[in-house]
Structure formats: structure tokens, C-alpha cells
Length: 297
Image (cartoon, rainbow, N blue to C red; front, side, top):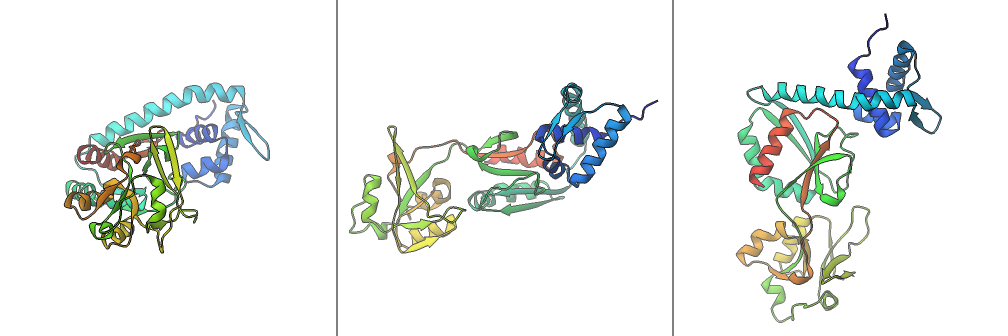
């Protein structure tokens, strides 16, 4: 009688089939690539069938492997669903929740989402990491990430929250006093602008659009900053025009401390998304965070 495969072997096979890579599968499973290879070699030996064709550069399913994985994916999804039901039966979620987000998003979360979440679930530790550059949440061990829609990987489950977003040019009344506010993006050349850099280190071009006309402007100014909240503060101090997410500037705009500029050139775009791997069991701590996010964002 042949020994039945372990759940670890089955998950390893599904991960390799999904990524076509032992290394990426190992990152997802938090195992060494050699361990994943050893698991599947032993699995193939016990069932007496080759499931994977391996070369030094690639790995692919054999026809037998494809048939097995086709059925295996639904089985693993059912298993994850059953485990989720077990989690849901617990009275109070406990543990650590690791989330990565951009600096700007982390600031937004700190306004109300994080305090509400921690007050609602005192037995959860939230590890919120603000990172300017995009990271592989599976490889880096995060439960979820939060980014703009276009930055979410296609193989992730995405949960939209908070409505649409937009970038907005803003300045203080003190800066605008005695100056003509820009009516088109081209007129920014006559103004002092607070500049920023992309995560790759290049000066960020301010992008505008109106009636299908797209304009990207290389603005000038003596101040270069790398954090959105500092750009808002610079605008508040009258140091120039800043181009920032409208949500971050909203309190200052509401109070009249900042004035919106070029609004008709600043269209809305799909907003923020929390995303997580769709093939994994979703921990109860993440489900709890998603509930708070939807209710309060």
C-alpha cells in the first residue's frame, strides 16, 4: 500500500505549479528551496509518477501533474475554507498581524483605523510597516499589503476601501498672497514648487489630466522632500506649492490653511486596496482588520 501524501507535500506541489519556480514556491511556504525539491521528489517516488519536468532553468508540470493540480487546487481551497470556519468559531482573534503600506497610507490608517482596530481587538498586536517601495508580501512574511489599485499584483485578492483618490496641488494663503495662482499646469514654471523623488531616486514629475489631455511637468524649487506629510508641512509654512494626496491634505484644506489649485486638472483614480494571497488560509486577525477597514475607511 502506498503512503498517502502529506498536506505539506500537496501545498508544495500547488505552489510550484503556481509559480513555476522552486525558489518562489519556497518563499511562499517559508521553506528552503532544497526542502521543497526534496518533498516533491519523495512524493513522486512514492506514487510512482513524475509530476514535474525539471531543468536547470525552469520547472513545468507533466500531463499527470497538471491533472492532479487541477483537482488539488479546489481541494486545498475547501480545506482553507474549513480552517477559516474553525477560526471564525473562536470568540476573540489573537496573535500578530503584519501589514505593509506606503508612508502616506500608514499615516491615513493612524488617523482612525489603527486606534479603532486596537481598541476593538486588544489581544492582537499590529505590526504596521511603512515602506516607500513595493515589496513581495509573501516573500517578506506579511499577512497583507495596502497600495493603490494599479500596484496590486494580479494573483492577489484585493479589497477596496475608502473610495477614489486623487493627487492635488496645494498652497497656503501666505504663499499665494501677491501671486497669480496657476490656472494650467504649464504655469507652475513661474512658481516655487516643493519637489519629491520616486522610490528609485528620480525627481517626481507632476502628472495632470483634463478632458483627455495628459500633462507631466518637471517642476522646480529649492526644496526636495521624500515624505508626503513633510510636503504638506512645507506648503503650510508657505514654502511653495506641493503636490500631495488629497486625503492627506484634507484636514488643512477643510480648515482653510491650504488652498486647492488646478482642481480640474486633478482627476480621481481608483483608490486604495488591501491585498493578500488568495491561495492561503486567511487568518482571523486579518479578517478582523478587513472588517474594521470596511466599516471605518
